[in-house]
Amino acid sequence: MKKAQIQSMESIVVLIIVTIMLVIGIIFFSNFQGQDSERMLDQERELNAVSVALQMINLEELRCSTATIRTERCVDKLKLNAFVGISNSNYDFYFDKFGNTNISIQLIHPKLEEEKIHIYSYTGNFTSASIHTFIPLTVFDPINNVRHFAIMEVRALS
Amino acid sequence: MRKAEVEISFNWIFILLVGAAFLFFFFNIINWQIDDGEQTTQRTISARLGPIFDALQSNPETVKVHDRVAFEVDFRCDLDTGHEYQLVNSNQIVQLPYQLFFTPERIGGSRLISLVKKFSVPYDIDSLLLLTDERTEYVFLGSDNTITRFYNLLPDEFVKRQINSINDYRAQDFRHTIFISSSELENLPQRSSNVVLQNNNVKINGEEFRRVNDALTLAAIVSGDEKNFKCTFDKLIKKTEIINDILINRSNTLGQHYVDIGNSVCASLYQPEIVSNRINDVITNNNQFNNQRIQDIAQANSNLRRQSCITIY
Image (cartoon, rainbow over all chains, first blue to last red; front, top):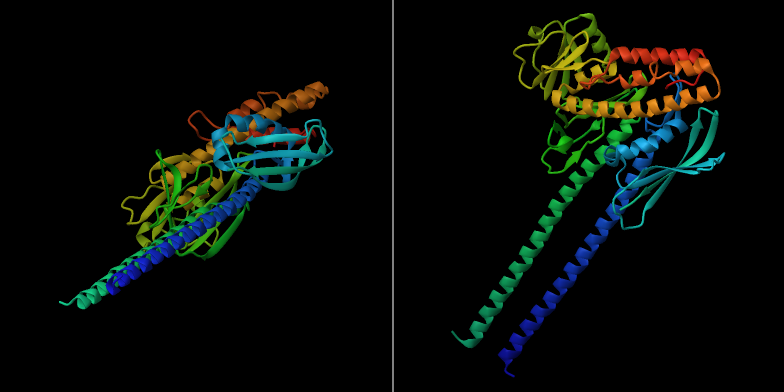
């Protein structure tokens, strides 16, 4: 092999190695970017679940109140029962607020036969695992004058 | 040219081409990263503003002056797109499908000022977020009782002043001026709007709305924009309809409960014509609030409390 041919071969090999390194760099970079986006999405889902839970316990539709006293983190049981039907018939309105979540309230003490009340359920499709947020609250039954200790569960779906 | 010379020239051209390709490639990556970074920042600001506004709204009867923000936000409302906001010079648009925010058309580039008012008819419907900034000025014209009362109701944190008439007005360096008067103004200065406080109505740039309570009137003043106000007003009507349905359902259950246990006093006070029908009439057929029915329900609630019955709200 002549000297000129060897030099050309050298140039081509260098070119191939540089190209391979470049391709590996691009693959590594895009993988990193993908992981970053996934992490940001997870963060947003978590924030969304907390935000939905906070909105839910402050929801005026459910709040226990008298004309003078405003009770925090308290849900009126009669309003809750009415809300279950009404939230279904106003699904679009509440979808904008609660999005891809399932929200339920579980009465812990004293317990009732119907322990878990589903107050909003996302009706679309979802694939990945959900993020759960739990918030303690009181459910007040004005007819029997009983306060139930309860847990609100918000499952963020994606 | 000798063969060795050709080879050297070829090597230099090769190095130049590959170098240029590398430079072009990395230059593009850097540019793309900068653009992406800016878009991510704008996306993050847009996305985070929503929860911040929601958090503000959950503290009723508060007024806050926030740190200066570098960005400006446009609030829009039309039939096709609904209520939305967009950062100026950004393509990120965020919809506001249920939020009860009353704002001028544009805020930002200065300190933001927020006021949260509870809206009740007479039962609580929601908190209204009244949001403006230091570049929006509120000028109250005249000294009649209503004008003076709302001048005093608007917190001192807002940029406000009261003058005798529009002739005394000297324009200053504000982005927008909202004139609050008792009669409609002609020949408004540039970059301004007019909110007219009448006995039963409030007129924003000529469009009339029923005055229900001070919270909604303050909302009209702070917004000063008829389209944005109308959008949020419609959402308020929708929210009231839902709460009405819940309270009617609850009242019927309570009425039946009192019949079942033989408490005729409370049962009679929960008759549909006293409670359910009146709640139903809080919103009129033309989507306005009925002040008479609001008073009737407040009265019915006091009667129930007086008789030690469970109240409507």
